[in-house]
Image (tube, rainbow, N blue to C red; front, side, top):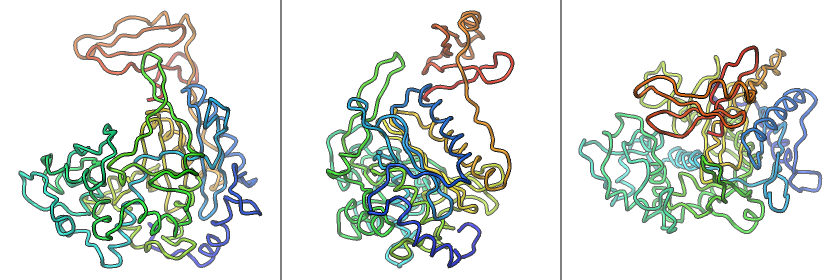
Length: 455
């Protein structure tokens, strides 16, 4: 844990007894809903109201959420419809494509092998991938530590197998294409988020373990963590539980999200339910212990939750895999995920062992999932401390008269904007271009406006 103390025996025993049954009924079937204990009911009631408001306002077809208190999933349920066309409800068991949350599992697998002495964090990647040679005008070697903390200087997307490549090329071909790229920065010198970098990490696993990445990670990481129904490759069961997802345009069109597989699978191709990811949080809160034993050590998690390439006093930045931030005085470990039509947020307070997972099915809605996740953590902290729950800020449209009254152009030059009114909806568009921003009215007296849309 981030505190450096070992998980007490009672907590580990609780995980072994409760963690494996908190998502199943007495007959062993997975539950569609996990109802909260009475102590958490005020939190879940308040969050349900917030979720219902955001779903109606942002036109989210489906959303699932899970809350974790130490080793127990205290609430998990779905809202809306996983398949709108035939009215299949979203539940705690609904499968989502979780995008870049996948990176956490790829990086955790590497750290397991680092613990065993099979890989070195600061060894040149070319030691493991002999033909890995992006053009490097700066000098210096790329390491696994740099790749997992987004400090390798690689391009964001590989030339093939990327977010826009529907050809279904292999991971090996995806990484080979990086030899046609040049480093953007000297390795270790600058943060630069890179899907290509974590895809390379997955290729290291594949090459050194001499097995295809997806089945190896499923058997060595997901199954031991108690997540046998999560996967990097969809099977028939996953497809039957997978939510439909929606793409949209600024002029109001909608269409089904594409479903092709990425060549850079280790960076973004995982399929999971919110309860799968909640169990993962339970493993983290147990200091890396899972029902089948330790996945990684507590010391390894502490290293992953420490900002890399930063002063010892740093409290924010990229750790190994995890984004490190603050919620008031508390450390937050998190990762968001975005892939065609899906948005996911996994966020936790490791010192307090509180966590939340939110997933939805509207493209680009990560600001919504992260807002709900942050409010969930704030409410959980307040409830545990016996304090009043914070109130979510829920916006509303302007009156038609107010909307029409402010329509027009403002400012000049590159700072100029235009406010356009349609019914009681107001959008702000910059003179220099860009996506129109929907403006909504803040609660309280007056007409204070704030940008609040699906983006």
